[in-house]
Length: 255
Image (cartoon, rainbow, N blue to C red; front, side):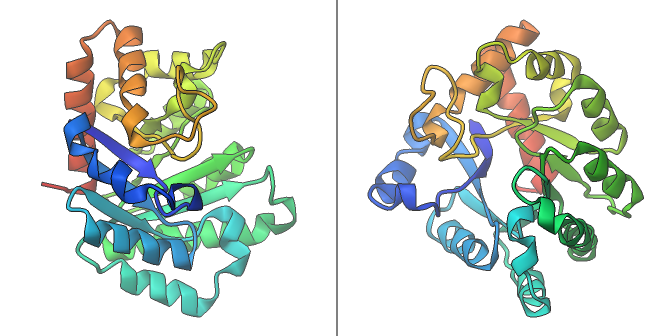
């Protein structure tokens, strides 16, 4: 079944029909979803969703855009949340220089600190990277990530950057941007990266794939990402779904 490794169902855009959408996932071949925290409240909300729906899991952490808001008390609470049986990752963490140039140093400190936390609690981590590839890779290189390591979510960088990430023992997650017209870089990445190192995601409610682009995204559309990967790799889509599901289950240690 399809495994959406990065979603935001706590977002207000799902307030009117969240239960209807999520309850329909099993009948639409969506077997697992990880809801991702980006600050203290969203991390708590992610756990609440994971407790309500058997097929959902949670990641907890502070997004780089909220890194300047993270207090020591918040960090300690994230660490405590990480002990919850349905928390399977720290995230999303990372760097975002597009909106946060004035907080770059704070972002770098929070990123490194949360990578260390992931190692301490023996969980993998999910990385957000926007206009910050050089610093992001350098921090990852300089960190002791432990055995579980991490994955780059919604990867849209170059094949050369993908190689650096794989060389660090990390994985790559692909979202709807793969299907966008003229997105040459991500197409090259998917052709280059072995299927064994790929996972798929929606990042919903953002970045709906073609032919749903412009709509509110959801895991009901993730099949379009699997179909595009299958096309690019000359594989059967059912094999892509099966392998990416196994990759995610192994990575997050979900039975």
